[in-house]
Figure (cartoon, rainbow, N blue to C red):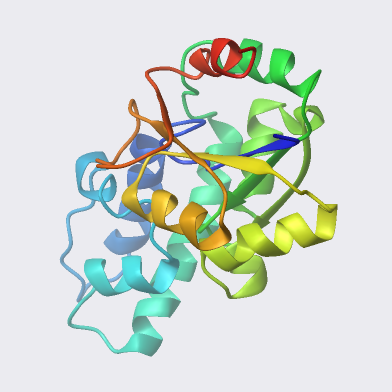
Amino acid sequence: MDSIIFDVDGTLWNSTEIVAKAWSEVVRLEPDIHVEITASSLTPLFGKILPEIAQALFPKESKERQLNLINKCCEKEHQFLLKETAPVYPRLEDTLKILSQKYPLYIVSNCQSGYVEVFLQSTGYDHYFKGHLCSGDTGMPKGPNIVQLMKTHRLKSPIYIGDTLGDYTASKEAGIPFVYASYGFGEVPDYDYTIAEPYDLVSLFSK
């Protein structure tokens, strides 16, 4: 293993409460949209690409309006997350500090453009990571983005850490091992390794 690639939501932090507040504010300004958005309703959607989330939240709307609404939601979400840092998982910074001394760390997410930057700015963790890529930047899903990141940074044997079945599938598409963050949002029936908290990575990768 020569590097570690992380998912964000459900792996590094849990922004669902703040995102739900931001998106609810957008929806309140749309008098013909009657959708209740809560942290629990967002949890199963996080990890999907934005058009899929928009389709799930606003199924009666045209694709054009779905994307318009979700883009407004994302803009508002960035504002909220820069004002109030979402909770990161326990001992995350200790974990990143230790791992980054031995391995280059990266992020690949299905999020919108700018979201990873918001995470890094809000938490102050930018200096732990060597690079990142997301679907909003490339228009591609997670699997191809992992491959693209590997090519860009010349990574030969990275490992991917995520919390959903989509993360597992993406890592297999990229041909790299998968570590299941069981404390996150999803259920994954198969994986190469599993962790119950971020700090478990320290002992896992010191073997």
